[in-house]
Amino acid sequence: MGTHTILTAISIAAPFPQKLGASPFFAYNRGMDKLNELSATEAAAPIAAGKLKSEALVEACLQRTAQREDEVQAWAALDRDLALARARACDREAPRTRLHGIPVGVKDVFDTADLP
Image (cartoon, rainbow, N blue to C red; front, top):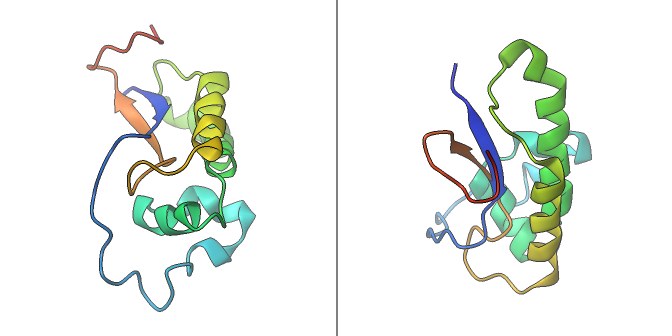
């Protein structure tokens, strides 16, 4: 099993695909209880359009992690408060990249100054 930490991406740049399916907001329209199932591409468009807050997306991912972590045991360190604070910061500022506000997990082989 892998171990990860969680951060909120604010400076990853990637091009949008030309098509996201029938509607760029198709996955977002699944409902608030399914936000954790959005791909980065599916979440990026509604975040950029102001229809989805990074904080809501991060909270959904954290809730799903809490539901499954006892069984999966994938996280060496998880700072819920830091992830939410970074998401709120992303929500307050204009997007800097196409993946602005998208939560990402960072493999434990990468040192981070803010987590063990």
